[in-house]
Length: 174
Image (cartoon, rainbow, N blue to C red; front, top):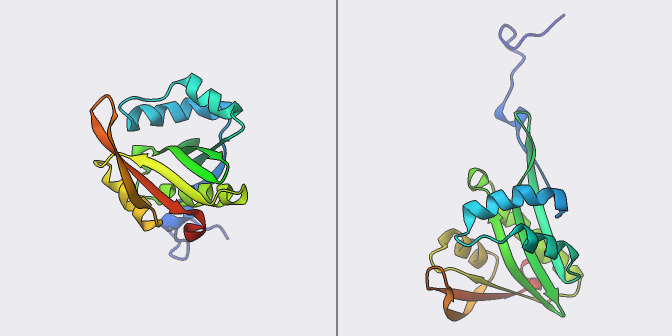
């Protein structure tokens, strides 16, 4: 007996049948093309290809990408984070999610992964700078236990905007 989705009521496809699957792994050179696309959409002064390549060879760097796959599109980077672990400190340098992949929890899970991996490497505190106008990022960081510990006046030269300095203990959110 053949089942056909148009004629057999027992054959039901839900939205979950074709849900996207997510995968995170260390950034590779082949990912940089996609990372640069996201970078240009998310930051007024994007990092260059050379900057991302340098991260791949930096022994203190922890750079992670997250891909989404769905049947209509090939596996593709949708989020990334570039970080440095120096001594017992994690410095979150860059974190971005492609606009079309926002509100899926990618940044939340990516930050958890970065914090967990850096904790395994001996980091006990995490630091970052964020624009006060970046309300979604600030909301995520506060949810994860970060607190504002200072301000860097005029930190972003392209706009003159200050940066909020945020910090958390890694054990609090791992």
